[in-house]
Length: 385
Length: 233
Ligand SMILES: Nc1ncnc2c1ncn2[C@@H]1O[C@H](COP(=O)(O)OP(=O)(O)O)[C@@H](O)[C@H]1O
Ligand SMILES: [Mg+2]
Image (cartoon, rainbow over all chains, first blue to last red; front, side):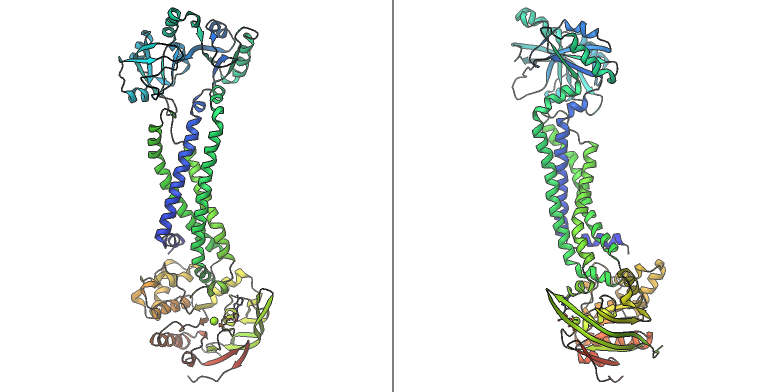
């Protein structure tokens, strides 16, 4: 008979109590994991950004454009390898509730800059050839059951009118963290149409996307670009892609902080529940622990029994909760794919699950162990009968 | 092996409890010897300090003053940890409510004290089986305490008390929770431990019939010891 066996048997002395506690921990770990995943999803754009990519926009605000003529001047800045550009299109597909990001880009340079969008070669060629062609991420195409060759009409909001596109390429993400819900098409198509309709808005770019030779020189290049356009009619604000993505999130940072807070509150609540379970068990067994001590067992042995039982229960809850997190995140991610295109349970979240369960198990055992170890044997024995 | 040497020597033992700021004297200047191989019954009214005295002799509580020598060792001088080791090697315990671990089988309960010994698995097994054979429970090895009668549980407890082969066995009201037949059985067993295995037994009881089985009876009253009439054996 070993200690482990005793720990295991002790844990299941009150089956219902143990079962409920494990269920509670499982649910807490599940909730914690989902909330952490929401936080991760929030930062997915930041995570996916590359250190060698910069974004340049109008210094006043993102809604003001920059002239197309800046392209050549940016290209001449030392350290710049690729310059691409685009406009947020903001078109609506049939109904407003069908939200997905859509923009106009110069596809050749754009895809050079974003190699994580992977196309089949024939589809890529077809996309580049057709000026009315567009590319869609795999998830987006799946959602609306679009096949290559299908015509899709977006209702313009920023750029009025009904815009007709033909699906030419469906891309897959090179890694799991690549957004597969995007829609992009030829900037030239947008620009040429504008020339015919609202000529004043033609040859204007929403933002430049710039590749640099290596991340170390990014800040030099950033400064050099902004200096180039200093005191011009449209000054630029250039920043790393990461900082650019971050600027969107910082608007909603309070929500993220609230979610993080809630995730920890969940853990603290279950910690209290677990501590109560362990305190009840230890109180009932105080006489038994006195018997162990009478027989010559030390405080260490009793500590191992209590901590072992507590950790066993919290670990079981952790395993169940973590396993449940995956299907739950998948279901949640599918449901919320408009808001969270990337919704993956990260390895980090699993580490946090394990750490949380460990802390729960340890904290719950501290006071009961202290009581069991410090009670005088004679007093402990008196509690029996 | 009934020698005539005292195995327990108590000298001027005093013990009181603190309740709030009140000092409650329980044992008052107790002095006596227990001879090796003796079966001693400690009697006295409830609350007279019998359990307290037994706990002091068994090394699970400490006296306020006085000397307790057990088998040549001054146990008052031992640290908590040394005392734990000393108990494991020298004292067997029998309680009124058996105090078996309910989630362990009879075998495992008896094996418990051996976990602290350096014995091999095989040696442990043979010790446990021997102890359970002595108490006549060889056919109940895999039973849990809940599946045994009170008398049987107390026999398992006796097996647990003797499995480490201690010189001294202390028993606090061992028959207090048993019917007459079971009590007889337990007392018969304890008698055999003294006569056949040469153990020294100190038994607290307030049952005169149980005390009658002992060689000597001592009465505790209000913290003072009176030598009782010698029992016939
Ligand atoms: N831990 C304790 N704290 C305070 N008083 C105690 C404690 N243990 C025992 N007593 C008191 O000491 C006296 C003797 O107790 P005990 O030795 O258990 O008596 P007995 O076993 O003869 O019935 C009783 O009055 C009891 O209430
Ligand atoms: Mg008593």
